[in-house]
Length: 570
Image (cartoon, rainbow, N blue to C red; front, side, top):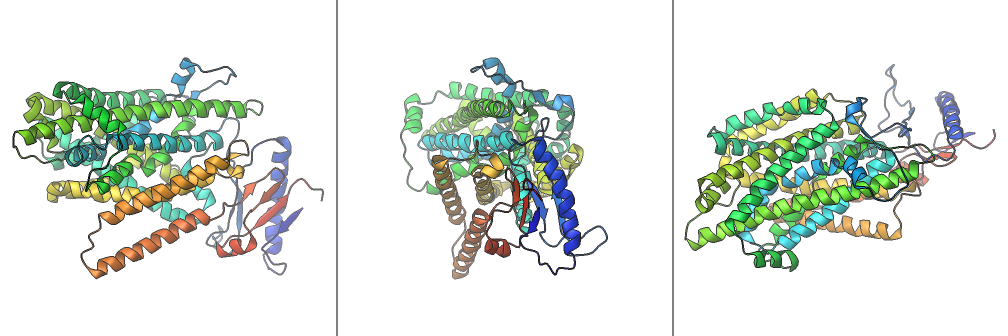
């Protein structure tokens, strides 16, 4: 028996809507009766913005069901067999052989923590703070392990990635804002990666930066060929690129012979040098990347789990355990590489200062610093590592953009189309920077890092909010009280740190700038509050399709409420 909670009996379109609801109820009833113990699934009641029907008439509600999960579904909707790794469930203990089948998504995610923008941040950290912020770099990576594990958890449990959930759960205008902000963050990171790769090509071959930008943009199509070889080959290639960077900087760390006592002291003793507060907050911002959360929640879908009713919960818990281990190992690996970059340049700058030689702490000048300290060959080792990670991060950036676009718009995008679009969008600003502002790349990186920090707040809130709802995760996987409190504290800490970093880089040299900053802060807080307070949309309970929000909230957010008792006799 259907009952509309928000539609008037005198509405001329009432009979038509009731007919749509009756047809839908019959299909829902059959599905729930066939699988009475299945976890709740989404029902999207699309009334946002009074969408038009195919004949052009307005104000007609369209009721649609989106099947989120079946026994063969994954978050990566690709039917090619080499794009999935089938995982058989067994109730046994830990298996190294089985862990290796889960290795891959964490490696791709770790790329973002090692991109040219982060390497430049490491070089700046070495110049301004020396070894003293290594402990904070470690803490940021530990925090990143926790957040990325939550993103993987969302994808494993629900079978859908974060962009798809946001599209389903939030009003279309707000979801569109999320999409635009995420795309800006991806493009910003892409510019850093393209410029970094072009810098490596310049060091190795002497070609101009602008020519390196064009080459980098074009050779990203190589990624399409790698993808066609299958998910395991793709993960192996990215793993080799990360290892190339690791070997390059670990070799240079051994050659430069840093002070081991100072390194250990910097890792274990918390301290923030005077004047390094912004630098310290920036370290956290550079490690937590918003598009990485979208990417990780989607990549875990490449593992095809045994989702039969009798094995579903066990298979999901097993997958979450192995993905947590894989994520932790991958990001600790990334930390050791970032630490090596900081240590190498700390020692190099120390030697340069001892000799009274002036230097510039930047990505482009890093090769000259190492060349002076370790010899001419060291700059080529530096450039090879930079080239490897620059190429791999441009490819993972393309993959992130693909999932974001498909998820927010429910619109499959062919890989070559996504590469063409992202390369075209990032090529123009990257060329402008290369031709007119090569000396100000550091400033551009700072602006991009602020943008990433702002976008992260709009990504972390929906991620944690989704984890807290039993209707989304299922009662067996939703947050408990301790996890809920930890998530709230984490959200507040991240939002506060990112807001501080954004405010710190804005020049407040006039009253108008103060007014502008206050206005931006007010809008920022209001939108974040709206995001956090917005109730989730229509979901399935065991026997009822309901909108959980009170009537006043439904009216405030412009939502039509619907209740369907599919189990009660008519």
